Amino acid sequence: MNNNKSIIETMRKRQSVRTFDTKNIDDSHFQFINEYLFNQSNLIGPFGGKSKIELVQVSGNVTDKGIKLGTYGLIKNPRGYLVGLAENSKYSLLDFAYCFHNLLLHLTELGMGTCWMGGTFSRNSFEKEIEIGEGEFIPGISPIGYPSQKQRVMDKALRYAVKADNKKSWEKLFYDASFEVSLAKENAGEWEIPIEMVRLGPSASNKQPWRLVLSADRTVCHFYIEHTPNYSSKLGYDMQLLDMGIAMCQFDLACRELKMEGQWLADDPKIGQTNEQIEYIVSWKKFSH
Ligand SMILES: Cc1cc2nc3c(=O)[nH]c(=O)nc-3n(C[C@H](O)[C@H](O)[C@H](O)COP(=O)(O)O)c2cc1C
Image 1: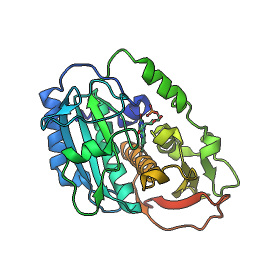
Image 2 (image 1 turned 135 degrees about the vertical axis):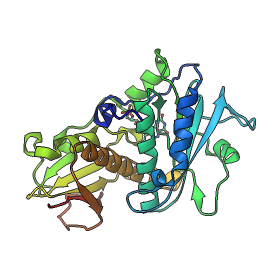
Image 3 (image 1 turned 90 degrees about the horizontal axis):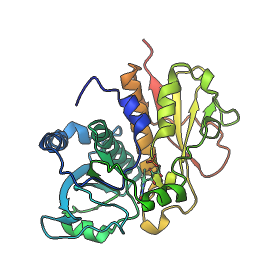
């Protein structure tokens, strides 16, 4: 990784890429991915669970084994896919999403394109390619390659359909001490950028289910999910937990770059939630020196 680059700037620029250039992946970039995945510490999430991520190379969506990986025409010219495997439980989905997103951001930093996908791909076809262990399933995948200069009509239509460029305002997402009062950016102090990175992160159908409450004494930030009712029930897992793992990753990476030190704690502060879709997930507590 080029350490002169700012991961915060990368998070600001990242967008889902669904149309790729026909250029092959540079050897050095392949090597980066393989080394990244070989280093087991990159696969351990904030709750301590270990995820699996596999790289599959494709040419015209067909793998070396001759299997055609299906994405319903949404992805054009990918050079490969990253395929995730996890158990279908709350903390393993959070850990997986955190690790997977961390890798996707590193690839974005290298100039590659990625797109989180939880729904619009044929799980069947990927299951044929990947060896799946007992109790595991594929919570998400991402195509990889270099972004094409030209977007297809399909890309624009999809962005329009999910209002991908319409990120919710601070007022709707972030709260000051309790859910009664919204957090004003100018009152967030050093927390402003990490919180803003949560806002800019990708989420399934751009639902942006994360809600944050910053404590009155500015020492802890509590993470909640506001579930979209029945969002992914047909798929048999809660895809919005992936959005939360992604939010944790965006927040954490920003804190590290800003040299804000702290840790994740699962310690529900029992702040009164304003509706029953809101569920406490985790808190990030600053170290007191
Ligand atoms: C967990 C998750 C699942 C997603 N699943 C899909 C998918 O199945 N198909 C797709 O085209 N995009 C999918 N997306 C991409 C979102 O639509 C996209 O992140 C969102 O619209 C915001 O756009 P942006 O990533 O360009 O900021 C998914 C994103 C996340 C985080």
